[in-house]
Length: 386
Image (cartoon, rainbow, N blue to C red; front, side, top):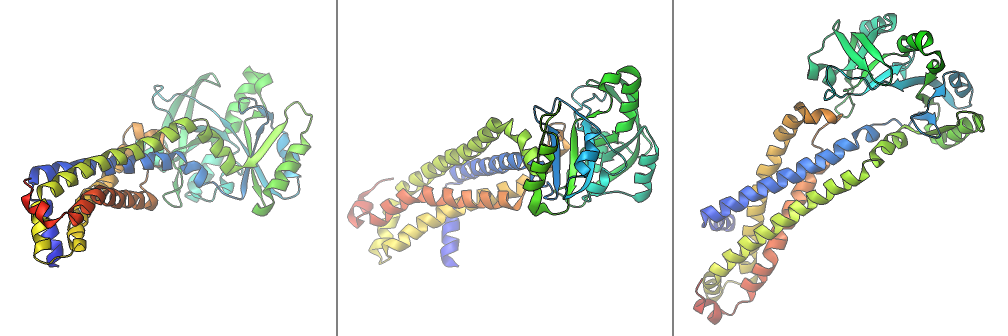
């Protein structure tokens, strides 16, 4: 206990220097945590994907649609439990900055394949009965202040025109990893419009969502589905839902790598700052350490003093930084910039990384000063003037 009190007093003997170092540590650990959370948010959709779901798309690109009648042929493939379909809409709500995922889906069974979406049964039934009905996630509804019964106007881009949807249901996620920032409506609504105005674009969809009976057979089922449409006008590519999601992440892989690199560069910079602080501190106290050795204290005790001071400095700064990470992340998630991410939650792994980085900073910063202080000759130390 006395040893810890001594270290604590040593940390704040140079109050201004220690305070500035702690502030730097707080900012570095906070920035590290937020950048790691950004990376986690990028992968959130893929990590939450179900092992029992697969996605079939056009083998050339998502831009190219597939005939809706493929659904029946896919359903006939052994191992397929259920099939639904969806189409990216890509409209604009009021102004372009209000971006959120919008999908036209098969209202009959699409949500039965997503048990992680929690509905009020009466609201889901109302959606199925209303051709212009829409379903929105809880976070999206909270972001724009929507409630059941509100009419949402969206200007079409891929599907031209001014569309109006009535919110019939708001769904929650089964846990915090479930994405609830989506906007869904009935595919039949836009298909009827296309049949009248652009018949050649009608009866086409973007992807089929497939539920399988045995997740261990997804590779065989995928090959069977793609073989079914081999040499057709719209050949298919079937993959797991996670692989499908990771395909989008891969398009911005360079950005993700850059964020990871920056997060670790921040730690390296603060490591240099703390090392400089400890070097100055140890140099100023060489006479004190020599006196301790003259009184009979071992070199190990002197080294422990330096290590203890560095670790306490690092852990104080890291502790404050970790505590600030949670409210700052919540504030970012509630901001317009945070709306770009499906989820923005600080994970336990991020917190442990912050703790590990703080320990590493403390150890590395103390290595050279501790070695020098422990091995200083008593005569040289006593003659030293800080």
